[in-house]
Amino acid sequence: DGGITQSPKYLFRKEGQNVTLSCEQNLNHDAMYWYRQDPGQGLRLIYYSQIVNDFQKGDIAEGYSVSREKKESFPLTVTSAQKNPTAFYLCASSITSSRSEQYFGPGTRLTVT
Amino acid sequence: AQSVTQPDIHITVSEGASLELRCNYSYGATPYLFWYVQSPGQGLQLLLKYFSGDTLVQGIKGFEAEFKRSQSSFNLRKPSVHWSDAAEYFCAVGALNQAGTALIFGKGTTLSVSS
Image (cartoon, rainbow over all chains, first blue to last red):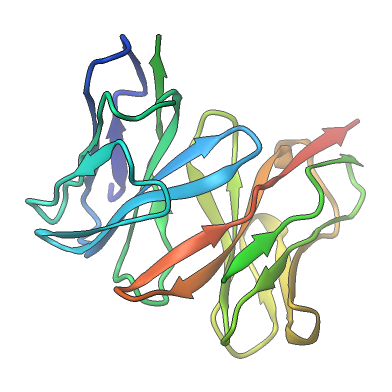
């Protein structure tokens, strides 16, 4: 089955530690995205990538980093510089970045204490 | 700047009753518009999309939406709500930016269904 996988479903970390969230897609999509979701805030774009080895900052990129070494993979690192990292993180992909719908993974809930 | 407003944070509808969720957008050119649904703790599922053409679009699960350019609206409707429709609904507009396209989401409307 084609789709987007995110792992793990739940992630717990101590404050001050970096943590990497996984996102893999087998849809052969060129574009991939990371969103952060907080209650009552909707989805806010962290980073997106239109092609391999290229990515752009979204609205709330501070404290996050990404890489896009392979077409199917777009991992997100939440660094210790992110002030409020506890949130629900959603990965998405689309055929291209222009006028195409995005397909979402199941999400990772990160809790930092 | 592009933006999406969903005026209703929470709506409760009786099972079998009709539903309309409101969405207003701000966009300088012809938008392309989406409705997504999210069950608790899950990812988002695409309900329907509007790119061009017929302003009334049909989606999955019996949902439809109407694009009204004069009102900058893209409201979601369903004639008869089922208990399984209880979820959070997001409207989104596609925005062209410098390097490509990103979706801008509204803050969502939570739908509760009463029996």
